[in-house]
Length: 105
Image (cartoon, rainbow, N blue to C red; front, side, top):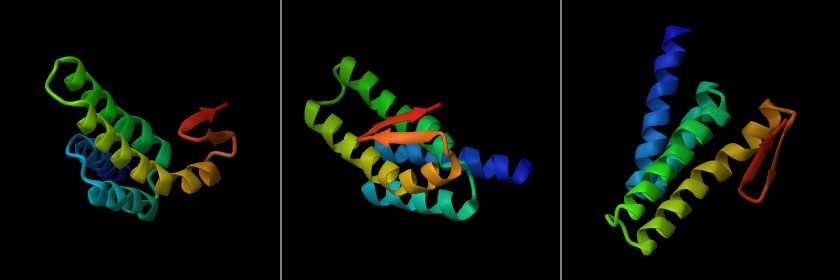
């Protein structure tokens, strides 16, 4: 369990960093690694990609990033999430997506 926990933490950090750095290739890589490792995709979506976007939003509010940088980071986040969506839906039968909105019952 400890090994999978450290892998999960590593994937979360990578996903967050990919969004913050607007690195689409890294976001896709993290998503694929998540699927192959058997880590819950919702954890990586919520704690990695979405938290990364939250950090980007905070930096925008502080005046440290431009609107264009927000849009590029958003595209990066969407790349990772789009790869994880099918795995999240198959793992959690009570989860559905409406565009980028995820609903878990």
